[in-house]
Amino acid sequence: MANTEGAEQAQFHHRGSRLGMPEHGPGSVPGLGRRLAGLFLDWLMCALVASAVTGGPGEDPAATTFTSGAALLLFAVYTALMLSVFGTTLGKRMVGIEVASTGERPLPWPVAMVVRTVLLCLVIPAVVYDRDHRGLHDRAAGTITRRM
Image (cartoon, rainbow, N blue to C red):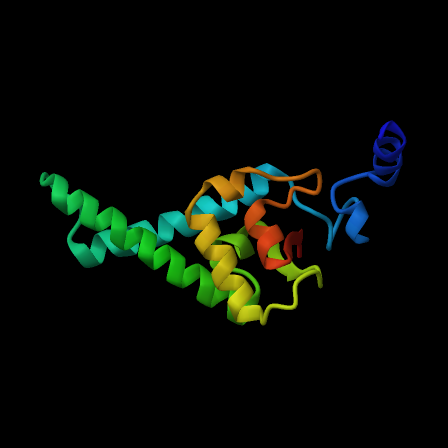
């Protein structure tokens, strides 16, 4: 067992090295900060649109819950649609990252993006990630986030 662990560590040089990705520059795996910034920008845009459409959270707790639910639904639809069509979202684009296939899963691209988005919205699969910074949502969809 120790021999297997040593072989795995020898193969790991940087994030994405096991997938043939460069260490720096275009095509490399971005850090956590860049990924969170893209996610935050996308969420902020969806929350602002949902707030404008629903009239904002106001004083009523039920209205706040409705606005939050509308923002999450909008975020899920927006993310799945943008990733299916463009491979990136506006927030991801602003920070210079995109989602790409690793070729691991034979899912059609739109289906993979829906799976990825649903798991991202559940949060926990996204915060559990491996040495390549691939969350469970990326692993399930057979994708990886990379710099543009």
